[in-house]
Image 1: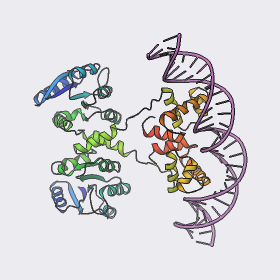
Image 2: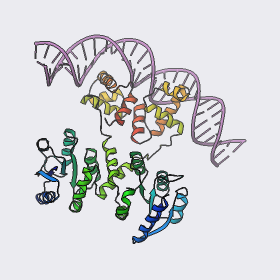
Image 3: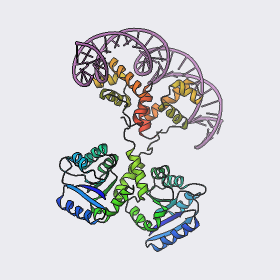
Length: 208
Length: 208
DNA sequence: AAATAAATCCCCTAATCATGTGATATCTAG
DNA sequence: CTAGATATCACATGATTAGGGGATTTATTT
């Protein structure tokens, strides 16, 4: 039997999800709560396999609750159910350890499949949610290139590894003065004025 | 009519997918190829709305092809279909601009839905694929903290912005000598020996 | 009460970096 | 062929950083 806890502040929805769970065989609903303020104690007592978690609840929200539960009981699966499909909520919930993310409009016809997917190690997501996740991975591609030449990129990569000018020179088999020149051009192109800023920018913008 | 191109080196599979597409109304298959070596020209001629792309093909693989197409024609949707569900292939395909990722075992019963989802702006993924994507987002949490104190983290953050010791001192309202001391401790704890290495490590390990 | 960790400050020296100016050799495109 | 971009090297000056000392204050722990 899969042991389940439910957190959902809307009485109607909580009731109807409870009903759905009772119909699904192999599921055992151990508790249904309208807030997550005591989630720590409740999880400790019931030791669920799966938690269905709303985001928007009075007191502690579902994301903080998820973070907390995952920190204390990493093995618990958590499926987020919410009306929100804005990028911050979605990405934070996932970063914090949610196993899946269903929009409420999809609960009726996907909850059953979603729970199965989770237990099989999958990660069910509403299409719009999946889209946000994919976009967040696609964005961090290098947007600007700042017109750096290949050689300048070499130098920048070497610099990012913490190499001194002397070491970069040795690495690239050029004189230290040439390294200096390249670095100057890099500073100009990236609009920075020191190593740390260049490295920081390079890493954060995916140049290295 | 949705214009579609298909790249798949397995003759049988290519044929059967072609058939499926012909059954789906609103779909127009403009071409089906067993390799992606001429993908650039083919896309230029046919101007498809959607490309179904295998990964493992002779010559240019599906990921490189996806990268190329997305660079030249960013508006084209690309759905990856493959037997591979290893993390490198999946994550790379997505980073490179794929709109969805179906394992071949799911093509038969999910292709239709997947195409619809894509056209609606969604991102269809096989459960195992979604799992990989989510895991890749959950990992980059900070693993080690290196025992840095709060103050040291402050300094490190300021350093990462490209501030000189002098500026950090002003920022934190402490003397430059104190900054030096903190930086020394940071170097010890991170096991580095200069600013760039510290910043690089800090960013890459999620400390800042 | 003593020990420890954290944050603060000070001094010194050698090494490294930032910045400017100038020069040469190649290669590509107009 | 000439202008421009790229890669290379040189020199000089002042500022900044690395790495080595040592010291005080405040909290927290033992």
